[in-house]
Image (cartoon, rainbow, N blue to C red):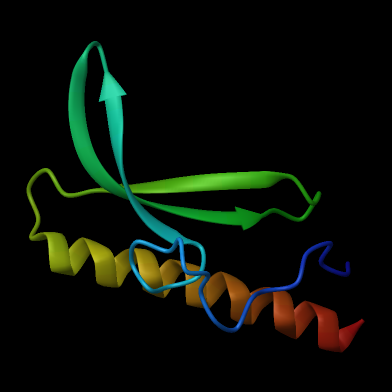
Length: 85
């Protein structure tokens, strides 16, 4: 299946992390705020999805690396599917 949206090569000036599709945000649960990184992507049905990486018990830099790795892996997966179709 072809991806509906292409990936940007350079992050926009609004980027808070410098990585396309990864942003630092706050998740609120029962009035409590938890900092996290959110990765946005389009699934196989071209629906916008968001996966959050919380740093409750981990160092923030480790969680950031995990979020970036998830995003890059997903981009590679979509690119591979696009080239094979």
